[in-house]
Amino acid sequence: MERTLGIIKPDAVSKNVIGKIISIIEENEIKIKAMKMVKLTEEQAKGFYYVHKDKPFFNDLIKFMTSGPVVLMLLEGENVIERWRKIMGVTDPAKADEGTIRKLYGTDIEKNAVHGSDAPETAEYETKYFFNALEVC
Ligand code: CMP
Image 1: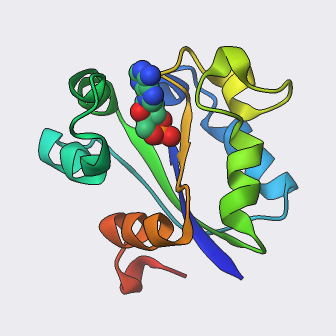
Image 2 (image 1 turned 90 degrees about the vertical axis):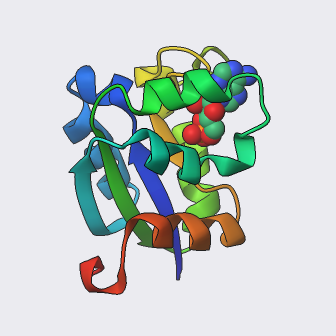
Image 3 (image 1 turned 120 degrees about the vertical axis):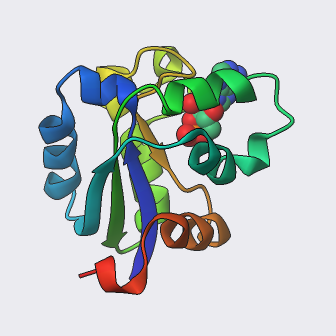
């Protein structure tokens, strides 16, 4: 069993597709062990995306991620880090496979509907960044 962090980003929340994305998660036998909807502060978003702090898109990414509510989810399942990334599709929705969440609901390479941790170490950091032990069922 593995855990990862999933985020439904502000573009998908404003498109009213939270339920559709959760259905896809459940249809894929992934368990939601914790979930909350929050509007991130600039400080919280910057801390979460600190690995991208030197990238040219960093400021726009922070602006986007704080532009509206997000849904944070702690996901659990077998091989869930890799499986959730496959279900999401690649970063750029225009290049994502048919049927993936980013193809279905993403807007562009920045506003790409969902996030998933990319490796076990990042999954550990990211799940603990947003959820404490008492919040995980
Ligand atoms: P995410 O999987 O949340 O991880 C980092 C985010 O940065 C990514 O999704 C996109 O939202 C954004 N991102 C990555 N590459 C680019 C890019 N080339 N231009 C703009 N935004 C990007």
